[in-house]
Every structure is written in structure tokens, then in C-alpha cells.
Image (cartoon, rainbow, N blue to C red; front, side, top):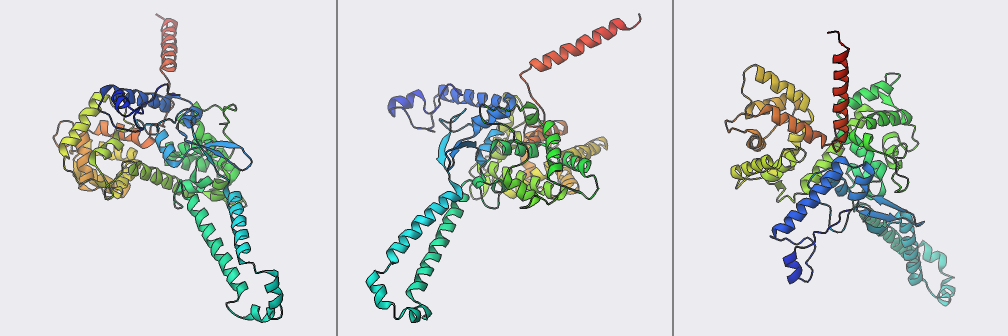
Length: 460
């Protein structure tokens, strides 16, 4: 839990009677405090267990109809949990949540029942009137536009209105076309979903292809639900999140076997007897990457569908691990080059990240150019993108990339640093387990001891 609050700076506290959440302050102490909070949150992302990361960045605790509670992330929470320097909202942190009641369909049927009861009550005719009309009842029923027909029409319209309202409520946390919507729960993310999604994001496509082939015993390119659980378990054990995870029964964050019911239905059909192909799974991975990138893009509040060059540069360097002084220098370089920039569209950004998905092949291609003595200029980069990733990089995107990585300003790319940083960006910092240094120290000491012992064992 963060032991401090950055709601307002001291100067504002005097003038505003305590300040306002999210207010902007020029006080250097305030911004220094904000930086401390962000550094603390970055350490949580890098070194904490998945259980703690989930409990810190999740913002919702849902109370269902039986009174049971469960903690969920929104899609925005999920992106924030894997993005460095994205501060958690004020007054939310470790085990601090917004409490919401969500009864799902049960709530819908309650509302529907009450509403229909009111309609019936209003549309009732007195007993005396019914007796008077009893003689003409059959004629009345046969006649179009009768009272009974009108009552049915009213009920039908109410049902349509209620279904539309419930549908809109379900789209509160994720659009219907979003991959998060397939998780169920209105697009909310449970702890098991969180582990699954980080595994999918942090695993290269090639690894899934190999794992699928390992468990595809008959060679038809398909796996059933049980086989996919084995694939998932093996892949997860190789990821940073999987290696750091320990079940925490006390917090309720235990990794349940299998997928959530909505995902199993999505992959294997309603009867769970379907088969999942590697093609369909990789399409799921592609959609997830697209939706996460879209959320990252929208978080920058695009104007007329465009983000600034500096914001795009920030997206590229988010996971770089570049020292703060050098990072500041690179950002100043961007500001100098694009003072009145035209910005970048989501399509331009997505094309560049499609290019990054093939970064290993890009690295090989750029190495060939380098060995052949060719300069790694903008034209070369666009040619590599067309050849390797089958995408077109706009001139403007290349200008931004070269402004960041052309260190000496000669119009050529610093290939080694570019590829290294882009590999980290692609894996979102989830590619390998991290520790506070003690493990690395012990490993180094053990290696040193082994080498020393080997030297003593060798004959002189």
C-alpha cells in the first residue's frame, strides 16, 4: 500500500481547503512526490508477485447476488498494470477498490418482472367493465388493434427497451467487438484471466506454434480443451508472471485450472467438445495485441484521431529501461524536431507495431544490410518493413523513429540500440523473471566458486 497521497500540493491545500483530486501544481515537492509514487509502482510491476500486482492495480470489487465478492480489473486497469510510469488513480491502491453491485441476469429479470407488473396494473380494466364486455370478448380478440393486442405490443416494447438497456450496461467496460468482451463479466478481468492474458501477450507466436505441435498427437493441427490446458501450463511456466506466481488462498487469488467459462466457450464451443487450431488461437493473440494497443493509444487523448510525436516516442520507450538522463535527451530531440508536428493516426502506429512483431527477422535483415556495407536509412527501413512484415511504414513514422535513434544526426539508424529497445517494447517487460539483485548475486558467487574449484582441480 502506498503510504502517501498526492491529491494536492501544500500550496493548494492552504488556498483550496485541502486541494482537489488530480489538480495540477507547479510545486517541485509535489511533482517529486508524484515521481516517488510512480517509481514505487514501477517496482511493484517489475518485482512483485502477480497476486500483489493484480490487487494493487485492480479497481473494482464486485458484489454478486448471493453476496459473494470478487476483485476485477477493467481493461484500462490491465493496461496500466503492465505500463511503466502510469500512475494508479487517487485513493486506489493495494486492496483499495471501488465497490459495485452487479447481479447480471438476475438483476435483469428482477427489473423485468417489476416493470411488467406495473404495466399490467395500469392496463387492467375493472371487473365491471370486463363483465359488460364479456359478450363481445371473442369479437374483440379477433379485431385488429384490440386492447389485448395493444397490451402485447406494450410488453414487447418494454422487453426490447430492457434488453437494450442491459446490452448497454454490458458494454460499460469493453466494446462488444473487443477481445475483453469474450471474457464475460461485462469485459472485466479476473485474476485467472489476468495471468492468461499476460501469458498470451508475453509469449512469441513461434513458441505457441511449437507447443501446439507438441500436443497435436494426430497431426491434424488441432487440440482439444484438455490438451490446450497443458499447452497453457507449459507456456505459462516459461514466462515472468508464471515463474513469480504463488497461489494466495488468503487473498482469494489462486490460479484456477483451465480458462474462464466464457473463454472455453469461445475456444471450444458451448459443449466444450470443439477443437482449437493454432490459426484461431494466433488470431485471438493478434486481436488481444490490437485491443491493448488501442487502449494505449486512446489513453493519450488523441485529437482528431491523432497523438503527438512525443506521445508516440513515449510509447516506444515505455519499456526501454534507458537511463533517465538519456531518456530526457531523446525526448528533447523529439520536441526539437516536431514542434508543430501533424501527429500520428492509430493506423500508422499499428503498422509500426506490426513491424515490431517481426523484430527478430528485422534484426537479421538489418544485419545483412550492415554486413553488405549499406547504410540503415529510412528507405532501407521501409523496404525491410515491406519485405519482412508486409506493412507500409509512413515517412512520418520513420522520421519520428530516426529522431529517437539517430544519435549523431547523420540520417542513419543506430541498429543495435534500436533493435534492443524494440525487443523490450514488444514483450512489454514481461519476457523474463526479475529480482531485486540478491538472486543474481548468489548465482554469480556460485559460478565463481565453481570456476575456482575447477582451476584448483586442474593438474599444474
